[in-house]
Image 1 (cartoon, rainbow, N blue to C red):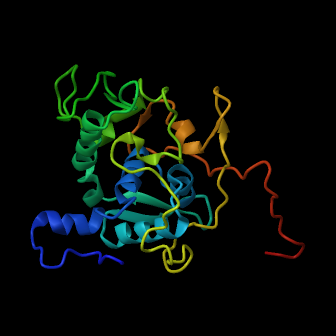
Image 2 (cartoon, helix red, strand yellow):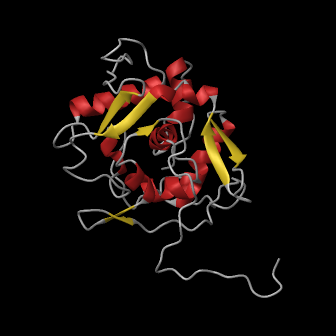
Amino acid sequence: MTLPRDYRGQTCALSRAMEVVGERWTLLILRDAFYGVRRFGEFAAHLAVPRAVLADRLAGLVAAGVLDRRPEPGTGRREAYVLTEKGLGLWPAVRALTDWGEQHAPAPGGPRRLFLHHADGARVGPDGHCSGCGTPVPPGDLLVAPGPGLGADAEGGADPGTDGIGTEADSDTDTDSGTDANSGTGADSGTEVDSGTEVDSGTEVDPVTAALARPHRLLTPLLTSPPAPSPTAPVRRPSKGTP
């Protein structure tokens, strides 16, 4: 049975908010957007979400005014997804759900991510205040850094929910799996994505996971250049005379 996207008969503010952010994968997409993920291929590689579902969720967030889709300077046709002021207002909810997950469904070894004040490097608590200087810290002044739980089970696309606000990835394509990732969304879904970065454990991780192994300031682009094609994948070269 396919469930409707709206909460018919419900008129409270929470039901209206859930119509925007309550679908599966949406909060994880928003989490990654705060971390600095901007390109379709980066979201797809990190979350391991079906591309049709990802395109649908991104299109919904753009239509709701939570994300803005804009051309990325210097990259030709590539587009980036950036949080709007409306989207930035969701940070307290994303942080609160993350902290709830750490408290009630903790990862082995402790928190996987720590939030630090960019100005002094001190921890920022669930209330959003710096433990060092005591000031409230907006998301743009936060650093996301690896926590003690990250080494216990390296985060990656196969387990995107382990930051505390999602569920495990599986083969489920959701109720919108019939949506074409290339139709009407403007998503850069045809871009090749790096197949992985080698890490010390000998396993391969996606570029987003590799970048988050170091402290990173929220809302700044996580990857400054497009993911490179897999070294094992054939590189398409234009034929002679192709513009």
